[in-house]
Image (cartoon, rainbow, N blue to C red; front, side, top):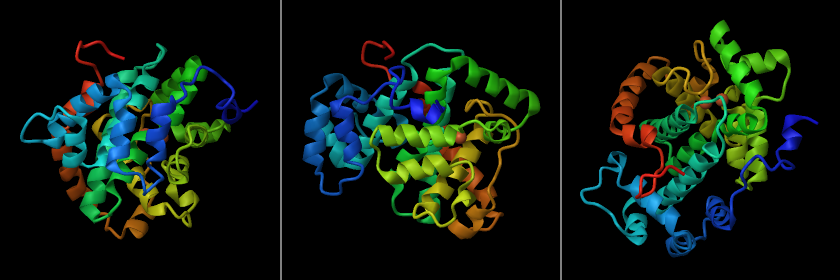
Amino acid sequence: MMIKEMISTVTEIPTPDVIVQQIISTASNPNVSAKELEKVISMDVGLSTKILKLVNSAYYALPRKITKLSEAIVIIGFKTVRNLALSVFTYSALHSKTTFVDHDKLWSHFMATAIFSEQIAKSIGYMNREEVFLAGLMHDVGKLAVDLLFPMYIFELSKVSRDLSKPMFLIEYEIGVDTHMEIGGELLRHWKFPEEYVSIAILHEKPSLNPDSPYIEMSCIVHLANVFSNIFLPGNSLSYGKPYLDQVVFKVLGIKPSRLETMYHELEIVFNKSKDLIFGGVEDETGVQT
Ligand SMILES: [Fe+2]
Ligand SMILES: [Fe+2]
């Protein structure tokens, strides 16, 4: 059986519960109201508390402490609250089992990529910023699946990447296994994420594989964010070596290579501002990690 096919049959991989499932479906349903989202999240007290903790992080720079979910939705927007709810789920999925992999580091790669995706979108005037954030957060979820199924394999794969100083996805191509991109796509499909997130997960290392994808712009933004995330936090993604930059991004996003320099500085500011989100993890009020 291929790894991809195992995704839906094994029990090692956490499945979103009903509440998280409903939150995911708000990502594809433009008719869901803020009130409905609030109702769903409120059913899980622990989840609300964790979301509020994230809302009050320095990244959002709110003038005062927000203590109610309804307020959070009004102030930072319901799509952002939805993203934070899915961040909580991803964080706990990532910490559901101890393996050879440093899950805090992998989490920081996920979160930095999400934040960078949003910032790049802002910088180039791309409208769907919240969708880009979520796509960035989920881009490498395939690594989580592989780690839960074959912990020794991904550990070794990461070691080879480090020893050869070569990005992990190129090694996956060379040895001819299911890549973490395809596996991630499969997992997101299994979790019932909308098709755009599936496509972006598949294309994030090399968007030029499908330049006609309806999600090519978002794929390029997440690709770029992933490259920068690997520059800011080398090795945290389990991948090493000089990050591969797909030249298609310049054409698709309409930017010049010289723009990357400016972008680096913009991202540096955001990175320093969002350290509590990137490195803080998601703890509840008692400080117990979940
Ligand atoms: Fe990746
Ligand atoms: Fe990545």
